[in-house]
Image: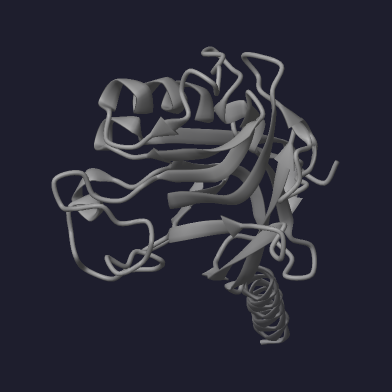
Length: 246
């Protein structure tokens, strides 16, 4: 009988220990918010809006920036083989003189650590042809064209000094084929902590100087032309990058 009692005590202790472990695991992986901070940059430095601070990548003329917007979508977070797909993750990053950075808060993220982040510049084809309002998708905002084309994925507006005059710069890039899927792998896993956001640089100059170097005096406006839009889309796949706390 005493032996049975000892075995019972051991069994109960084992169950209690297992319950404590399960409780601790559940506590540590309880869903919580994750903040993503997107910082507007130009050549790796904070953007100076509304001033002729930048040189035409394909020439010598000076230009200024007034408005910079980027649609990101379909955010996926991973911790090893644990994957969390963020529902309706359509976010319009909006930058100007009063907003040099834009915050996106992802609620109820169930992962304790983040080792990989995927997202798209642009919008998936199904959502791009829909009038349904989801996240920051809204056909009444400045980023919608029509339902043959859908939304503008990237918007950059400003002006350039040319031949003694100031001429407008307007770059509105859309079309389904210009969505770019991005995938970032952390050097080491990052703890998901609402007080320690993940930061990304969004460098507008990479839109104009990458695989294709854009001369703004020859290409001042990009809107409905698929070929011109494709030139810029080739570049903007490199426009967003995480800092991973650097």
